[in-house]
Image (tube, helix red, strand yellow):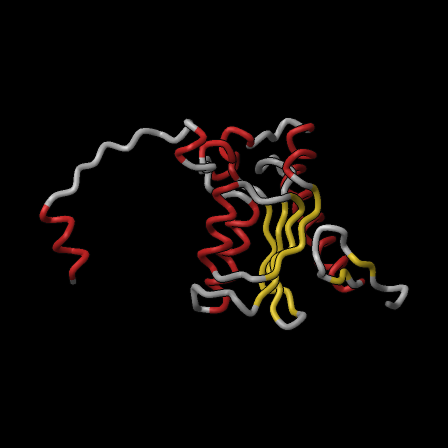
Length: 162
């Protein structure tokens, strides 16, 4: 392995100097977002074939939209730029482990490779604790799932059959 590469402990991905640059871009976007008071200190970038497609930060406060996390914003920009909803040939760089909502967006977009800076426990130490969300989505056996009242009707089945 060259001096420009290091093996990550949590996966078999090799982190190169280029990867570090794309992560630095995500970090710079996160810092800009904090300075601009757009939201929490989180940034993300989407890269395809070594070219940055999008770079975004958390804009929850600025947009007054709780879904405007860095990863979601970066995915939204990337799919608009590429003109498609599928990003399986792209790589995501994010400054922190994604929350459950962002994980859903990442999975729905088809992203297969992701580099993560801090983990959820580090974020929690700085006041960004998503444990309640992770617990909520752990499954019914956790006893925390929001109750769902079934309202299935014939109309529900009609649109699914189309």
